Amino acid sequence: MSDELNRETAVAAADETTAADVPTTTLHEAIQSAIDENEVILFMKGVPDAPACGFSARAVSVLEHVGKPFAAVNILPDPRIRQELSAISGWPTIPQLFVNGELVGGADIIAEMYEDGEIYDTLGVERPAQAAAVETGSEPQPLKIENLLS
Amino acid sequence: MASEIQDVGATEIKTRIEAGIPGCRATVTGDGHHFQAVVEGPMFGGISRVAQHKLVYDVFGDELGDRIHALALKTKATEDD
Image (cartoon, rainbow over all chains, first blue to last red; front, side, top):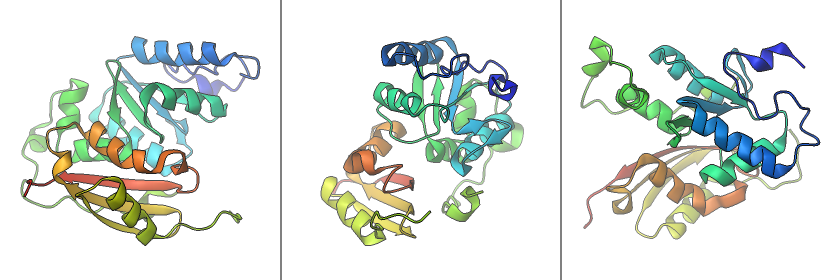
């Protein structure tokens, strides 16, 4: 229906159907193949241009900053997307980032990996010169929840 | 969002993490729905970040995203002593 759901390679399991009639097994398979078929895929609340949650927004901004193209699936259209996703990943919260079929983590892990530059290696992107020399020894900033809420 | 669900306290979160993962130390702050937790312990050594966070998430199961709206998490491996 709405075009903004179909951004980029968005493989949203609930893309074309309104999902009401999609059997759960099909949904499960659709999510699994989306994970398998996309090198980098982010399951999030909302879409990259309009994240519906601060945690998802943070994950998107890391990926965009690193400059790695990614597929995005909005989990909001049908609660079963999240259910099935969590059943597959064993991870309870959203967002969830998968690279090469493997769960990399949620918002906190993505942020931590960005802070220490590890995310570049995981995504197969060359680290920018100054990121390689991140201020070592300085304690990572505590996560401020206020910044996550929109 | 007004709800009949009872608010969760940061102390409850801390107690449950420490009970659920024997030997860890948790520092938790939060407002009843959104929490930040730093959890340290030797059990986090040598396992992936995903596995580390899962250990903590497993303490709460379905309550995450529901009764506990959000739990910002940092895990740290400490030396066994």
